[in-house]
Length: 315
Ligand SMILES: *[C@@H]1O[C@H](CO)[C@@H](O)[C@H](O)[C@H]1NC(C)=O
Ligand SMILES: *[C@@H]1O[C@H](CO)[C@@H](O)[C@H](O)[C@H]1NC(C)=O
Ligand SMILES: *[C@@H]1O[C@H](CO)[C@@H](O)[C@H](O)[C@H]1NC(C)=O
Image (tube, rainbow, N blue to C red; front, side, top):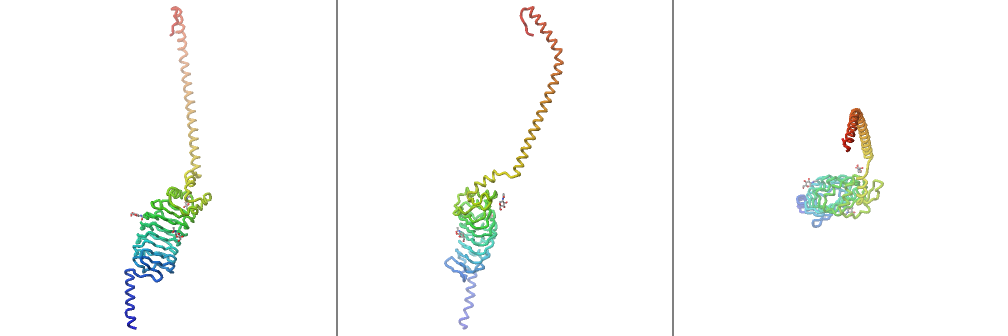
């Protein structure tokens, strides 16, 4: 009895201690292979604490995790792939992935994500694939959500609550090739213009393009989002609002009023100058009356002289 129980607790303590220090254990409900831990449908409601530190592939899918503790996750500094789909994650914080900067594949699909912090994916400079699909509570993504995750090649945003997206969120991803956008209530108004124009020019592959359509407004319902740049460009860049029409009306009135005033001024000037000229002519006429008589006398005089010489002379 004493023989059997003597080394028992010591062994347990040692194992626990080693497990804590080196993280070499394997959580009871998970399967651990070389550098791979699979806790698939293991009934976990919390992140498993005693994962081998050398883990590179971690599957936590189909559990009830509500959050990922950044400190514990950060112990797995070699982690390459994290599948946390089908859980109950509500948010991704700025520092959630700070410790796992070598991540290449991240699957957060089928959760209840409502908040993605602005710098959440920034530490993941090598990330190739990100799956955020089936997060119906996700209504918006921050402008800089993928800033610095500039190696991203595939982004799955299917079946979320996204109705709009800032084009700046994606335009900094030079290697993005595949983008899934279907199943979202896209609101194709002028706020989405830049994003749809980006889609027109980005040459991305949209495997689900047929289903990625506008849900609003009425005139664009069912229009493929990847092509919505054409009608939106027309509607938003040439569209005039009520205040535009009022402004044009005002400008028109100003031109009309200006023209009227100018015409009136011109008329006044013409009348005034005419009057002035007539008055001047009148006085001239009076002055010239005498001169005319003198002139006539001179002409007569010269005629007389011309008659004398036999040659007419002009005076
Ligand atoms: C993203 O996750 C959903 C649900 O888990 C899955 O159906 C889909 O195939 C995944 N997307 C990609 C591109 O693998
Ligand atoms: C991206 O990285 C640069 C330099 O590494 C850093 O200055 C910047 O703050 C990062 N951006 C975000 C949104 O984290
Ligand atoms: C377009 O829709 C978005 C999302 O609902 C809204 O925030 C924005 O104000 C709308 N923009 C215009 C120009 O109507």
